[in-house]
Length: 451
Image (tube, rainbow, N blue to C red; front, side, top):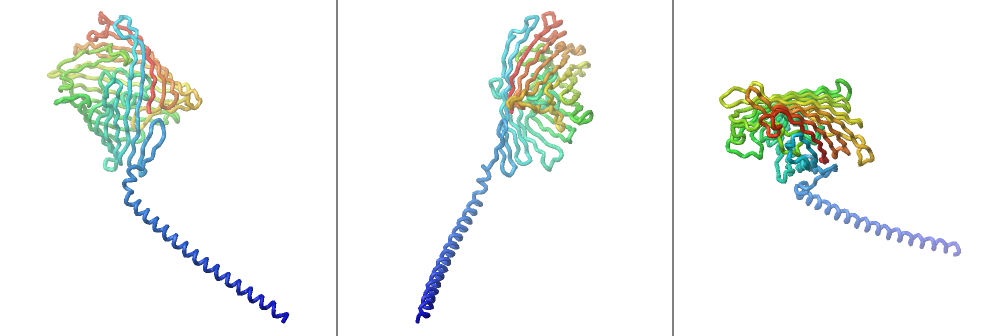
């Protein structure tokens, strides 16, 4: 009897333990069932969400853009097909002119030389640019074009809209990146400008050929407008003299019809004493009647050796009168300039386009550095006298010196001094009273911001 009691107790304990185990198994099974139900509900919800996303995907993609930083924003679609960049520039000028003959009435002047705002970007294989200038207190359309460079035209491009005729290294280089406050005298005197037209071109890493057929500028409205045909070619020798060297050679031509309602069958060639803040033209042919057309030929060259650069051009224009032969002598202009960066930077040359681009500052002021310092000098000449055609617009020599301080890649201060001397400007209102000579000294300064 004493032995049987422990055996009975042990049997009861084993039975209770088995009951507990079976209860736990039932609880585990119930918990597993609930988990399966919850997973099923979650999968159903995810499926519904995916279906809803598919139905709304096109609308979401339309506003799903990336924004990159920089001086101004660039908006880019996730798939990379569309892109828009906000661009602009502001040039604030001031200066002083001293004329020995006392001709200039406004010796002190300030000017908003440029106040532009625009957008540029792409839509699939089409690039576009639209820019408006508000500097004169009114909206003046600058560039406004669409360009296609996709598979159908590769390796060429096709551009339609308003843009510059392909002439002159100095003219095609943006005013944001030229060395002096103003371009060489002949670019304005011979009216190298923007026109509405159709252009095309092709090129490689160090060469290019561009041509176009143009009407008038967008600001010129006429029933019978003229036209122009222009073309340019360039070739660059890269890293020939040293690793960071450039030798640029180029040439361009333009034929311009003047027998139309815009030009009124006439021509006029004129120029300021370098600075734009005066409206007085120191050399001026006056209006030349019975003009049929004119032809411009130009040559250009540039050299870059690290911080040092040379740049020069020469251009000649022949005027054709109605019912007569072309003027034998013609009008011409040219320049030679040099610049040097004391801080070691170099002018950025864009070899595919044959122009100069943005200077990259090694040690920006806003990062605690000294910025970039550039010194430049130029000899500029414009000859608007043609003895064979009895045109006495004058000859103007200018010596220009300048200092540029680049605070960073987008901000610079400029100071230029110009000494201009005018000879034999019989037809020019800016000439001396006796028409023999006139000397003008001037100094100008600019604060420039672009993005």
